[in-house]
Image (cartoon, rainbow, N blue to C red; front, side, top):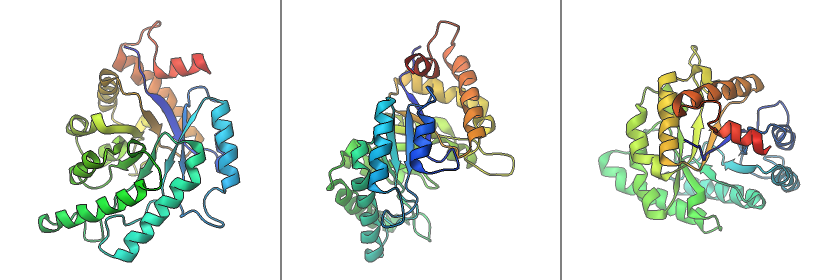
Length: 280
């Protein structure tokens, strides 16, 4: 079974900036996508400068890699505080505009809940209305709906699924957080795999720290995940969402083992890592 997905990782594997990380990662034939992490609202002194975006885009294109973009985290796209909702939309729009020269494979946003947690049934319609208004405002800045991915977080994605369907959006499926939180993989895959553009994968170590090596991800679940992706013909990106060189190297080694087990890969069976290496 030939895999169609591409392997990616984050822009902060090495203790240096976005551009140098992309340069170093471009020398690894297994890595075909880099998730550009924009942790702060773009502006003077925050986020990559436009000049750096242009350079890292050139490096990525020269090596045949794509880039994904992760918008800042702590936003309120469905907030009932209208000023905060509008400010959050503005942050995402600025992120989209800044990174547009990368022609990103995806732009990932968090549809955060407020401090009260998941909306009560009586408030769910209003919560969705506010979220939809924000997402439509973001789409007006020129991003294709399928590029805009809602990431699964600490709430049931079913709350946002009507928005994904209505607007033609995609999903960033964080299977690392599902495992961390004890949420079963199969029901989520059954509902969301058809909409998924990016899979975020990482392990949680014995201390409870996530975004660690795949050595800390349940092995049987990993096999089921890759089997499901291959059976679906998933053509998106699997982002090894780790932040240390050792975790990346170990995750790639584990991924080779899991691919062999999940896909029945013998010496002549091409996996994503084997294909990337051959084309590198």
